[in-house]
Image 1: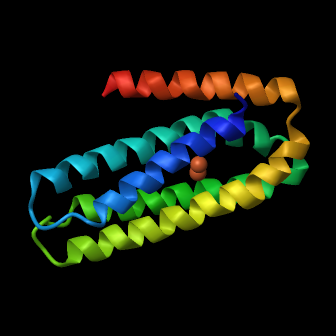
Image 2: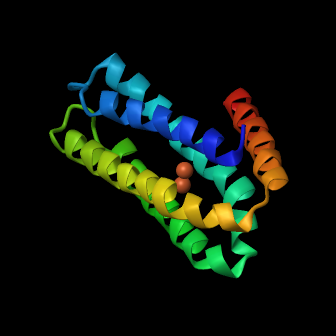
Amino acid sequence: MNIFEALREDHDVQRDLLDQLTQTHGDSERRAKLLQATRDALVHHENAEEQYFYVPLMQADLTQEQARHSIAEHHEIDEILETLEHTAPSSPAWLTHAKTLREKVLHHLEEEEHQVFQQAGKVLDDTEKQELATRYRREMSEQAGAD
Ligand SMILES: [Fe+2]
Ligand SMILES: [Fe+2]
């Protein structure tokens, strides 16, 4: 498995969670559980992806600006997530924020998969692509264990 396959696999998990999250209702246990699962999936992925994908991409001229842009989007996603976590699940604003989060993340994943991966493919060699996947996956399991 290479880094692109590893990241894409987790992107699909995020898409699925966000679809489910935006279909929840009111102050329910399902809503609370899905929010927690979505938060973990997003935050763990951002951390591991920054360390084992964007740090190496920052070192190459071709991908430096795109890497900065993606990391800035991670911060924007974190802010929406924080707003959502501070909104009462029973309030109508909750779903509005959840939908904003979904749109923002979907846009971000799309951009990573269609623009960043393509450029990164030119910068990383095959060994690096595999090693980064191993490190990324190890970091993801460590974070899952730490929760
Ligand atoms: Fe990302
Ligand atoms: Fe990503």
